[in-house]
Amino acid sequence: MGKAFDKISAGLEDAIAFAQGNGSRGRVAKPIDVRAIRIATNKTQKEFAEAYGLPIGTVRDWEQNRRQPDAPARVLLSLIQAEPGTVENLIAKSQG
Image 1: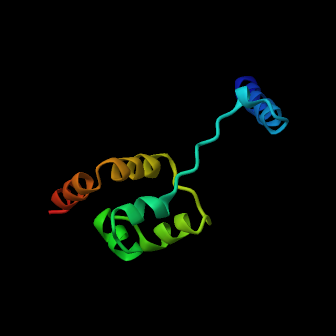
Image 2: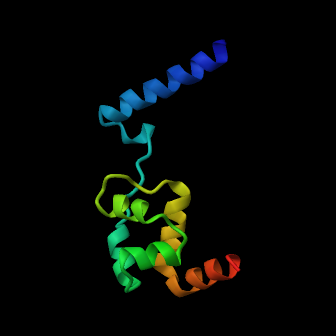
């Protein structure tokens, strides 16, 4: 139990230091503009969600800043931003 407590305590100290302005003790993901990525693909929210296998509610939440994409979603969105057609084709192939 001592090791677990030490890890939790260290994490809490890092969080407090970060909250007090010490940026070296934490990481913040750079915001990702899902709406801009979608618009660049020239798709509606529904078309974007269907093309890339995403729930439409999730796309809406991202665009309205009610939620932020998690790490795997950020990777997918980055790939879509770089090569939307390729990603769409790969997803279509994988779905049969």
